[in-house]
Length: 141
Picture 1 (cartoon, rainbow, N blue to C red):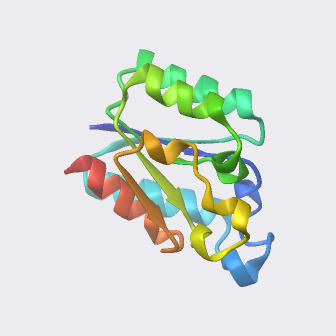
Picture 2 (cartoon, rainbow, N blue to C red; picture 1 turned 135 degrees about the vertical axis):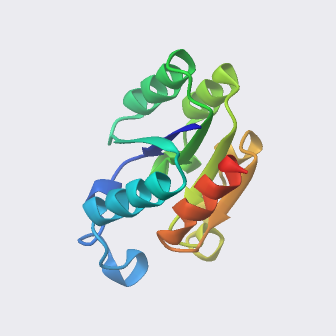
């Protein structure tokens, strides 16, 4: 199994950005946790991050051409604004799970809208970085 983990804007700032919401775990720690978990499960994983919407669309489209079986995506703020990311997911038709470290339903009203959730097979919200593991395991099963 081959899984692509995509992280959107500001997720590279984990451990620095609003630690009272996102915790003190760094982005590198997150990637190490994901890679270690996938190695134990014999899952090939690739983790990508960008602060640019077009890059995220390119990552999704690239997954179609490299035989990716599933996508775990935390589009960050683009969750609430990007029809382009939704359209890219729909275009490639690869099973996807949406992940959010915080509970977006408990935050500002504008965060309650997720464009990509209409495509994703599952949304994992408010479970911290462990939500990525839940999403990977969901796709693997």
